[in-house]
Image (cartoon, rainbow, N blue to C red):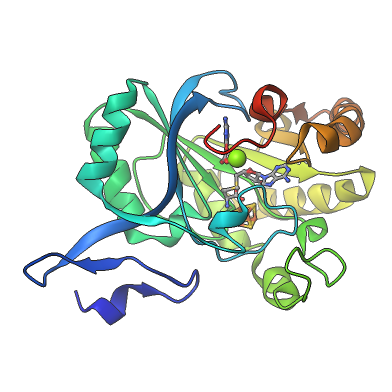
Length: 264
Ligand SMILES: C[S@@+](CC[C@H](N)C(=O)[O-])C[C@H]1O[C@@H](n2cnc3c(N)ncnc32)[C@H](O)[C@@H]1O
Ligand SMILES: Nc1nc2[nH]cc(C(=O)O)c2c(=O)[nH]1
Ligand code: SF4
Ligand SMILES: [Mg+2]
């Protein structure tokens, strides 16, 4: 594969690296790889190994993984190296997250290698990209208007990503394909009641577009907050909204336990 073909212009991350003989080798840009408890969603509390790829096609102003999106940092690892690291942690569950892990062809090869070894795989994705892969749980977090990095909310202070984020954040076709192909959860980041009309409208559109059902039980409201302090402001409000609308609430257990520490 020519090196230039594998430069990912979306994320600005080059996934092609040559070995000593000058052959291109499959690698993934990895920001962190760690053992923790699943902190979000239907598998909350399950001991899991997290693989966090770097690079994202969106720029949520609140992104709790700044070094995979706004300022990506990573090391390039081969799939066997990633699998060996996962094996050393001894969990049954693996969570592939990012950044946006489905940007990369190599994520499919990684998921296949994990599946062959019997791991349960969850993929955390923003839902803008569909790929066919052995995914046991597609944990899809479509991004609402309230995630858009307007000049006032942009952590880099410029508002340069506002238009692109706003244009790209919802892709109904990709969302429908993810929902049809995989066991899934739709996990919305919610700040307050202003987010609810957009969630309801998107669900209506998606229920029309997808051939398989989306139950209210598949919809999770997750409080916006990368720190304990911020979650203390949002979580009760979001829990009340979950009760009012009949959706599920998911905590952010890892933030409760370890605040915003890396590798948690
Ligand atoms: C860092 S993202 C990586 C996966 C993918 N890019 C996505 O957004 O789904 C992992 C999860 O964290 C959520 N998230 C990121 N920042 C957050 C914040 N400040 N508060 C609540 N959830 C957040 C995302 O919505 C997503 O469910
Ligand atoms: N403990 C823990 N659980 C998580 N669930 C989804 C996460 C993510 O960043 O995708 C995450 C994370 O970063 N940490
Ligand atoms: S889509 Fe996910 S990784 Fe990308 S900026 Fe938003 S929260 Fe961060
Ligand atoms: Mg996280």
